[in-house]
Length: 115
Image 1 (tube, rainbow, N blue to C red):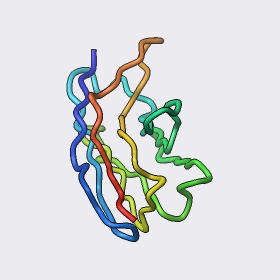
Image 2 (image 1 turned 60 degrees about the vertical axis):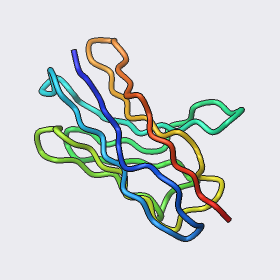
Image 3 (image 1 turned 180 degrees about the horizontal axis):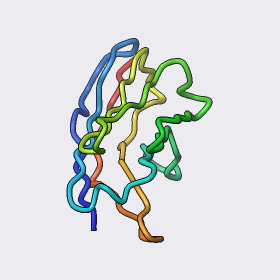
C-alpha cells in the first residue's frame, strides 16, 4: 500500500508560479511511475504530467514548457513546478500511481489562478 499526500496549492495571479509536492509513504519501492492529474470544475480529470523510475517525463500539451515534474531518488517526494500559470490551470491537482493494478490517489490540492 502507498499513501500520497499533496501540498503546495494556493491562490496565485496569472503569470505566477507554484510548486506542488506529493509525499509518498508505505511501499514506495514498488512505484514505477508517478503521475499528476488535475480536475477543473465540470470537467473530467486529466493527466498533466508523469515521471518514471528511470527519469523519463511527459507532459500534456497544455502545460509543456511551463510545468516541470521531478522526484527525489527514493520516491519520497514528487514535485510539480508550475510557472507562467494561466487561469485555465485552475483545478484540483492530484498525484497518482498504480501498483499491482491498484490505483492510489492523494486527496488533492487546490490551485486557483486569478486573471
